[in-house]
Amino acid sequence: MSISFEIDEKVTGIARRTTEFVRDVVLPAEESCGGNVHDGPEPLRRRLQEAARSAGVFAPHVSAEWGGLGLDLRGQAVVFEAAGYSLLGPLALNCAAPDEGNMHLLEVVATEEQKERYLRPLAAGEVRSCFAMTEPAPGAGSDPRALTTTATRVEGGWRIDGRKWFISGADGAAFAICMARTSGGPGDAGGATMFLVDADNPGMKIVRNIDTLDQGLFGGHSEVAFEGCVVGDDAVLGAVDEGFTYAQVRLGPARMTHCMRWLGVARRAQDIALERAADRSAFGKPLAELGMVQQLLADSEIDIETSRAVLWRACWELDQGRSAAQHTSIAKTYVSEAVNRVVDRAVQVCGALGISKDAPLSRLYREVRPFRIYDGPSETHRWAIAKRAVRAARDRRASL
Ligand SMILES: Cc1cc2nc3c(=O)[nH]c(=O)nc-3n(C[C@H](O)[C@H](O)[C@H](O)COP(=O)(O)OP(=O)(O)OC[C@H]3O[C@@H](n4cnc5c(N)ncnc54)[C@H](O)[C@@H]3O)c2cc1C
Image (cartoon, rainbow, N blue to C red):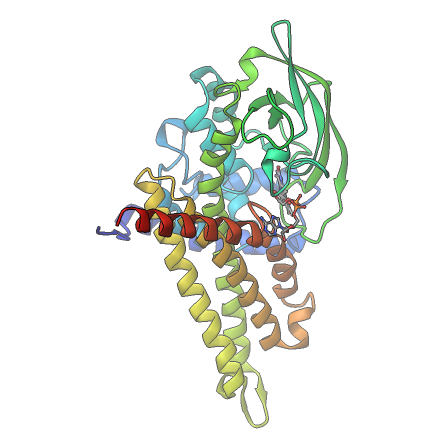
């Protein structure tokens, strides 16, 4: 088996332009709002996306047919990391969560009509979207099979009823992709269906915007009620009862694109720590010459390099058309924890400055923490990784 991580000229060019664009345009914009975009400042989003379009870096993940630059996942890994150097970089390139994952899902699963109606404006940045799966207890969380939201047959369509929460970007989204149960009951492994619900549907309501630790996801995270929410048959995304299968289509790559973006944040935190360690002296020498600081800096370099390696490996697997569940679980778990370690060490190296709002580190610190929870908490992934490893070992033994 040969694994290719060759980065071609097209990707190198887009990555270079992204780095320059982020440095010159996006970082100043992040500075001016302190990275707080939970209230969804629409003029800022429009201005940044227009600038990204002019810089030739807009929608790198979307195929050319839908107005993007058509990069595969390995190409995205390089460019998204460069975009992730600023908290607002992915928003500017229109490759932020949850829109980026929804674009991928729509490209793979939607009908041509649905693509024209939902994917085209989303890929162009004209509208935003959200993905509504998680529910308050006892509903779907790390165990999606606990899904309680129902969709029942009515004449000409479906009626959706249920409560969702932590739905990123719901406030201000033009539509939601809502997961609802069309057969079976909570605990069943199948029976879920995805629905495209227009936000102006009177049966879909934002109940509240949840006050969370992070502030950098455009539109924040909302609790959303679906009450007597009637949609037509044309709102079904893919086939009825196949929602859990499609969720994997979305989640595998979406986990990796989260890793790419947060790796950019880790690189930025480490750059800040390196600069500070070189400039600040204590006990007669620069911090950078103190052994324990060197260990912090070295461990972060190791974390960043190893994160990139496991991430690119998983991307290569996905680019080959494989499900790569084990590789994406390993990458998601490793990178989410490594990124947290890197930012935490950078805070330590910078001392009190790291905690203050004078340096962007405190902002990066609060943003990276939730990544160990969403798209599968570390514990859920470890549980799945171990189960797959044991199964593979059993299969190997049985085939002897
Ligand atoms: C910032 C943020 C944004 C989000 N955006 C969205 C969104 O846009 N759309 C959406 O649908 N959801 C979203 N979520 C929800 C997210 O997907 C869930 O939080 C996640 O799936 C975990 O579910 P839960 O919070 O209900 O935790 P629970 O299911 O209650 O799990 C709690 C804890 O139990 C432990 N645990 C779980 N499973 C296992 C296991 N098998 N073995 C051992 N321990 C285990 C873990 O420590 C886990 O953290 C978001 C969450 C956050 C924090």
